[in-house]
Image 1 (cartoon, rainbow, N blue to C red):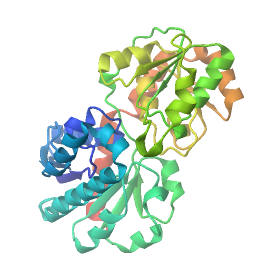
Image 2 (image 1 turned 135 degrees about the vertical axis):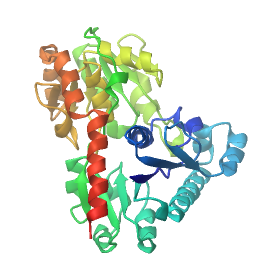
Image 3 (image 1 turned 180 degrees about the vertical axis):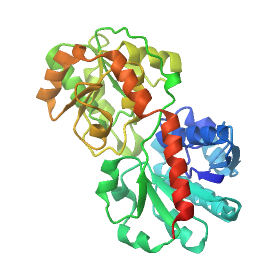
Length: 367
């Protein structure tokens, strides 16, 4: 099958991706590699060059390079000139879509990992080949008047969780494919130390402040790792809700970790990952990463959490801080080997790729 994968995002560039948390980009690259391994002819369209086994098409990045020369790097650009960053983002997104859609007749299916706005589906009105859109955020954030997309015959959507799908029943969602993980990268050690872990973007919807609160109440250690966005568009979550409680002993900040060995050790030695989210998260890849290292998860019952965590098997699902503390007290009853087994069986990359192959076939056979 000839497949175009399109990732219309400014972060889809090796130079930028290595310094940012961007799960949609990681998923697009993983999918392109495995589809290529299976013999499909794959092209990945991206903002800049990315390392992939497939053919890679990207746009000229002079506009980005010029802005970075003025500001140094993306975090500084976002802090000092958010409006310029937003304009660059939109222009680059549209450029990638135009480039990919100009080539659409070369492929059986074009699969867009869209992360912002309705332009892609609307552009698809003028195309004849099937276009599949996977959104990695909430559909409600990106698609006004979702019922209107039903009338674009060649456009189909896929959801990354059942919870995401039910949020917008008006969309023509062809199927649900959970995100997958390369489990051989996340090593299971089976040994733990006496700390809990908060990992990922350090923003209010992730509930890092709640993880801090329950660990302080229980006098247990918490390690926090991930990116914070202090100053980005006026964001002050880090300085007001997280940093004041970091004492270097009970509550520590480990930085943003990309090195896989360090990441495995941090996950693998934690008693549990705390995931007290405050929004309907479409999918939480960090839950799979923790489980793959044998680490159970204690998560609030929001979004896709019940699709990933099975109570008493690979963690506990709770509704509030009190229940989270109760779960922390009994977390050692969870088998760390079963955490690993659960992810390997249900969320390996091979399963994700096979499910997308089925959706591509559905796209081709759809009216």
